[in-house]
Image 1 (spheres, rainbow, N blue to C red):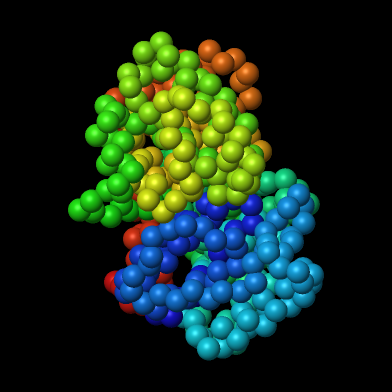
Image 2: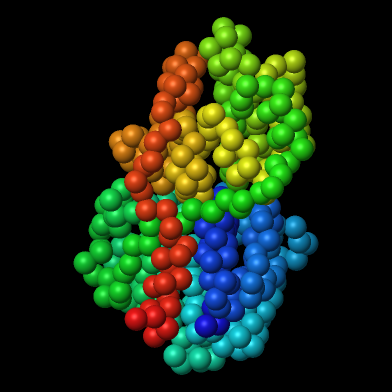
Length: 390
């Protein structure tokens, strides 16, 4: 199959990382072309039959689409993007077009996505167009004027199928979307799309050296959002307190900076952690190596980080970002399942945060029983729909 993946990340990076893992799985057997129109995200190379399709990069600031690093106007950039997408579709003539999250969100990209779908159907009338949706998809503040009826109407008119990348034992689409009964196209739950760790002969030198000197590590992951410096500083103070009382042994807390942190924000954290049981590292592609060997992970509750934790079975304290529509729901569902500890970020009690860290560190490692092979399931569903699998 010729597979074209359109996954435009605008605020966070979870949609991009999830789609990249699906593309990685598909590229083992098929020709995969991935539209790259968002800010760069570090990650492992994709082997197999894979090609990036770079187009001008945009992002969302406040309520508006803006160029990421470009002096042209957004209107000029969108016109160039449209021309490049159209040319790519006619060159590839895809058998499958995978569109991330629209029409459940990304409505500001409607005038780009619908022409892309139309061009794909013109280039290959047999193309199958699929919506690729995360596990938990309540309406966000960016889609406040879009009704469930509009979403289901667009699905039925423009798409051939819907892939929900979640475990229905944890969450179902009808938990958050009121018009499921109006969806007329086939819908499949794939399970969570979790990045699979590579078997490595050697770990990074920094990780190996740290583990030789200390009995263990914990990690804090700031993720791809822009609002994580404040909570990072609270976590540093809480870790310093429990460490000073000997409650976490000689473990070091490794802080992974946010993808969008400025130099000033990185320096602010460096000053705060001076002379303490901490290390700071940039957002990096080797994060899973650190997470796999950590005694504890502290993080927000985004899709990709949560998937990583479940895949590796790492003890976890989730601190959901309340400005993200999916995170509090996801964290509470996983806590109900017994998979994680949870701390609500709006709690101001420093002692409560310290207690939450110690509870999470004292948890046994558990197998959540959650379906985590969503990338493989996605490939198999697409193959079956194309008549390539019985």
